[in-house]
Length: 100
Image 1 (tube, rainbow, N blue to C red):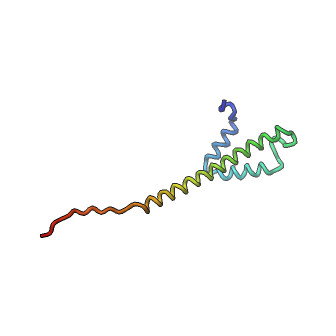
Image 2 (tube, helix red, strand yellow):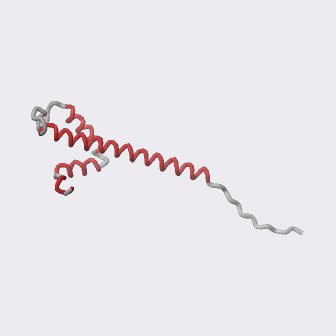
Image 3 (cartoon, rainbow, N blue to C red):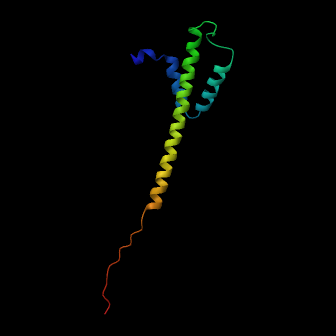
């Protein structure tokens, strides 16, 4: 069922977002499309006009939240590695030798 709901256009858009080279460009273009008065299906038609804007807004918000979560996880990993590196104790093994 989930596969039936995903159109080729949505698949193409999400694959394009996964490419870090184009990620911010696509997000910026999507926001400009949402704000601009030009539209694929005009908002004059009550439900049909809102569907494309709603889908695009959902994808953009999801992508931005995913970027924020990835950044947060990487910062947490860096902090945990930093605390592990500072908390390592130095142990020195010394063999006892009797001097006569």
